[in-house]
Image: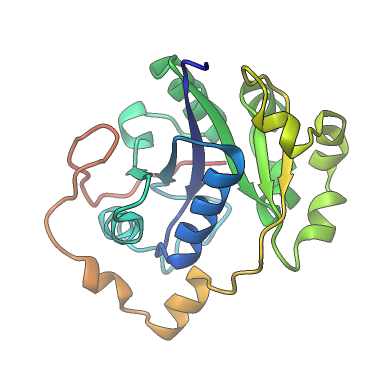
Length: 220
């Protein structure tokens, strides 16, 4: 019997969060046998344009609305950790929660540009990575420089799930029915969506601290 809780980490802008985030998180939780999925709402991502980026508090509230009554925890923990890059955030989380096992959840679109992230090989060495296939991005993802390095660490899903203890590097690929919902389309159809999520600072579901609406930048 394993003693550590298994947690999937899904990072993103969540600008806004939508039903596709929830659907894919619940799918991955079942597929990998996870106890929970944590949504790491980034204060900002320099690989994405800042124009049109809603305040952090509004994005967190939108995520909490989508995660309601699901084994999903919404957090903006980078603010408290003081980390700028994903590799540093994941290192801080593994140190802070030594009784958890983590897997980094990544869409195929992110895998296609993973080689641009700071110390991406160190991310892979820190925890396993689960890649969720995404229509239109598979070819670029599996021909990417990062995949050329990661391919040797590919693990079948059944072997990954049944491991007594996770180790890294390890890469597992999940096939998921297409979900056409996107934050970009939502913003295009409803540019004032963030006004619906205005209000007092929300409370972080991981750290239990209030989340102000100021913006910082967390880099991949």
